Image (cartoon, rainbow, N blue to C red; front, side, top):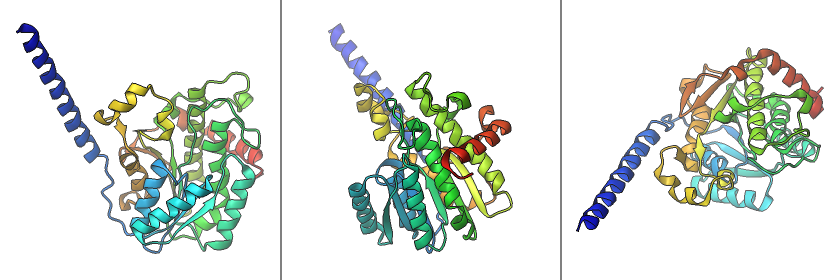
Length: 317
């Protein structure tokens, strides 16, 4: 009898914990939602890595708001399928163009195509990325995290700046991570050839992207191009699926810190469309709210050196 009552008590406690977690999750999600109803009719948006996860949800939302959306993806089949799927839901123009951020040649080719075909760009979302992959190098010899997450987007953004400047008020949204605070910029071992740690390599690339966002905003201080860096949170995407134990994957939906792609995209969408952020640039956002930068992202000397270093690596200088 005592064992039976104990079992009932345990079940009740577990049920209460689950209910509390669900209620907490609902509360947190409600306060992490983009509330802007901005109409994007006539706007032109580019989203990298847009065929899956955060990128797909962001592209869909921008399209539903009336924007012409260009999906910049590496996989042609998935990219075309995603473009057709989003078009069916929004009835707006959705295009796919191949972009492999692990290839500077591909970035240059993509940018040239956009320059030739589009009159301007209103929104550029630098979303594509890799996470905790084994040591690999890009086509140009860069460590994969640094090459894809940072250098590819550095080159892409700079090549498209003239089109961004042609918009009356354009936005560059870079998808970062709270893990940037754990990163370091080692100019003597930029490719992590002396020692390699998967997580640290990711952190380093996101710190580089964060420094780029702040430095870019300074370069564009007197121009109507705003720059935002966004932490989407811990999102249940393909990137995360390969980095957590199997049993965690099954209980993720119960915990407030684990977001699905639509929930994680809210901060990205907010920075891309919110009227309240029209006068803000060079800041860091999480949960649809502006947050303080970690000191590592505020190092102006490192930011300037990284910019010049990146120009040389990507052939811009």
